[in-house]
Image (cartoon, rainbow, N blue to C red; front, side, top):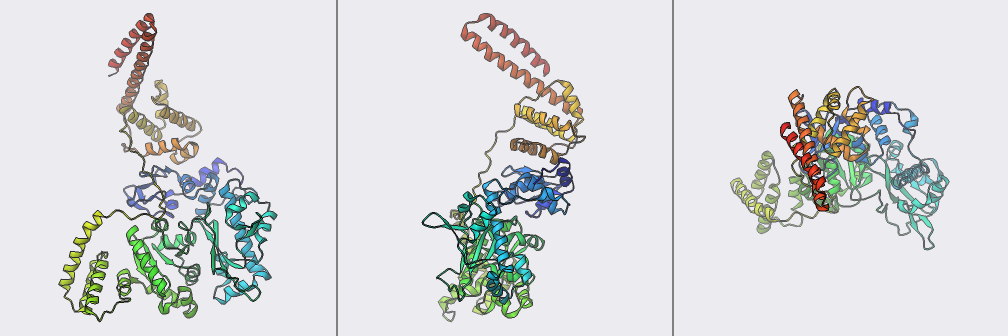
Length: 611
């Protein structure tokens, strides 16, 4: 990738709106002149993440992260600055010379992460080629087409085939001059007893697994039995192992492709399997995702909650799928604020089977118009293995579902189900309402006393330590910088005063600001952040930009700031003289001690006059 000129960097940033970019990752709601949402960089329940459209910056008051649109993508996606520039251009359909867009090949990438991603991208490319263009992949291609997949779907999801050859991928990588020392860390190989590598995936239909940025980070391979190969006691599905790229507790299949539709509709369909997601896509439902063969995790919920408001669980219709639905509901209710609904697939089928049997139109109708409430699902779920002809089991059942009804916020929904229970079990609505109220009163003390449930491998976030209140001098220095950012003409007057900032970090930031303005007619905050190299300086700028100060400063304010600087400078000089005086006294140098005493008296007079 050629170096991108600063003029192009500035042009792309100026033609972009950070609200539009961040809004593709974070649900933003306008409050005042800024937008707020849940921070994508740490888990939180209350929005502390702010985007300022007028300043074109973001700032989280919880974790302290902040920056411009490039910094946001760098932090979120873990990409370099040039990659962030390219991505912003792509997201805004801004044409960019190909020399600036060329990504690193597997023989060019330098870091371990970029090497591993490049190797996975190459593997996905080769597997796909094997499926659609070779005789070795014909049987796998026929299998997929027989299952109702179209060539367009196969292309869309980049499905591939790993041939029945244990050294296939290694040969491909070596032919591409890839660095062999990275091979073991990809998870694409297993080590033989003699230390050599063998392909982990062979004789399998390959489904690439991508990160939220659309980069391949792993695979799930479905075993393809044939007359030549047989089943060889192989697992039906084989996933990539845990690597520095792939953490199955973090990854959601198709999240990168579904995110745009999720944000548009505010909804996401949660499926059990990859084929269900692909089937849904075929039926026109593009906001479908799946967890990686495990129960939903807190990390995955956090990803979903940043993009959607409602989760529609559409798991398999068999008993295992029903149990998985129930677990998913409980986990989502306990760990998110997401709205929930359920689609139950009839005839104990999975969604993919249902689509193949009844067609895409029927599947779409089921998924979109067949949603039911969580409580309706729970009512049926708790009927399982109960003899409701028995009076005791009836009462137990009513008690259980009333406990579930406590979670329902809608008064209309509560009224509907209380009426339904009253009619079915010949109980008065008043009695049911009283029992519901009593259950809530009994449950509240238990909830207050219970410890929070343990997070499953939670993302660790340490809140910033509480800072000491800023001194008058610190406040004055920050306010002056704030004014300089908004009125660069003030800089000439500050220079002419001959006064410096008191603390080194503020003086350093001022000198950087001064250097930036040497080549700029106007101060642009987002551009200044690109100019700065140190993260600590960028954070200072973000904090200063967020000061609650009046729109315009006054002459009196400027003079007051200069006076604070003068007084602080004199006070610091007095302290230094006293230290020197103490040292002179310890050394017995009475002449120097007397001279310093006179200087201290003069400085003290100046300090009083400055007041």
